[in-house]
Structures are given as structure tokens and as C-alpha cells.
Image (cartoon, rainbow, N blue to C red; front, top):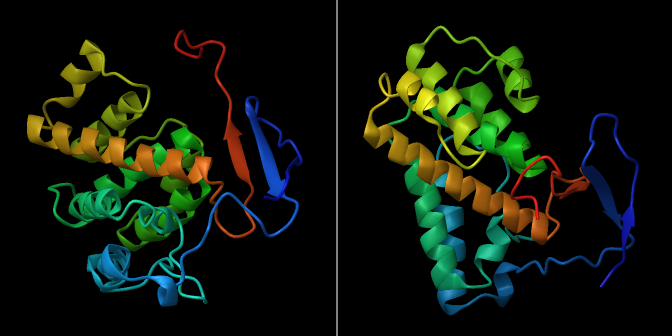
Length: 227
């Protein structure tokens, strides 16, 4: 396995360090289609031929060799669990009651909280396609205040920013429910859990956008649960 080297520390990344691999060997072992059969092949086809593959292709699902990109390759390590996970992701993206803008804002809040390069790159592309502006994308990525005219979208943003911290206090709940209902809150908690799972898996297996180094998540000494 290749060594992991400490790379340049970026200004403002107080608790984050960025790594590069010394050679092509990584923690990830890419599965190519010609080596798949049975349950692994079925999961591969569900991802590459299912709802993610229909409509405009806003980010790539497979590499030139045919291996799955982003978090999806690792789904094949445990096909039954991976299939359940990819079905959950498809339901969140294509079957929830959230509008496209609200859904993508929530996903990008999780990407920002985890500093997940792949999820940010992929879902900023999706976000632009559903109407998110560059200023909105920048504010979400930098975790900056963002004024939204739509009260439903504003509530989604506020609630999701609370969810990624691990809890929703009474003041946030009262401000967000209504305009959101309990069904939407359930969908958002599921969304946050799913994309946090993907971010953790991609961090563990050192998966990032091509050319974007993977940041190591360090405990925040200010948080009581940091240790």
C-alpha cells in the first residue's frame, strides 16, 4: 500500500490536513465490470442503469475503465448492504418531497460539514441545474449566513445546519416547524445520515475528486464529544 504524505496546509483549515498518495496504490480497490458477477454485478447495474443514469449526466458515475466513482465502488464490498444503501440514496434524491433546490442545499450542507470534496463537486453541479446561484453555493460551502426569500428553503437550510451538529435545539425546531412538517424533518434527518455515511466512507477509503486531496478530519478540541 502506498504511503500517505502530508501536503500543503491551506490557510483557514485549522483542524484539517491534506494528503497525497506517494504512488497509485490506495486504500481503494476499484472493481472493473469484467471481474463482477452475481450480487456485485447486480448492484453495479442498479447504479449504472438506474435513476442516477437517466436524464442529464451532471457528474460521472464510472471511470474510463468502467469502475464506479465516488462512494459507489465501495458499495460492492458488501453487495447486500451496498444495494440497500444505493436504494436509500435513490429514494432520497428521486422520491422525497423536498424540492430540487432544498434537497441540494441540504446535501451541500453535509458536504461542507464533512469537507467532502466529491459530494461538493458532484452536488454543486446538480445544484446549478436546479437553480442554485453561485453566491448561494459559495455561502453554503463556506458555512456563511445566507438569506433566502422562500421560508421553506430557509427552514431547510437552518434545520440541516443544526442536524449536522448532531441535534436540533428547541429554538431551531420552533423556527423551522412550521413551515416544515414532521414528514419533511424525517426526510432531512435521513438525508443527513445518508450523505454523512458516504462522506465517512470516502474519507476512510481516501476517495476524492480527481486532483483534490482528501482532508483528514481532526477532532475539534472545543467540542465535548471530540474525544
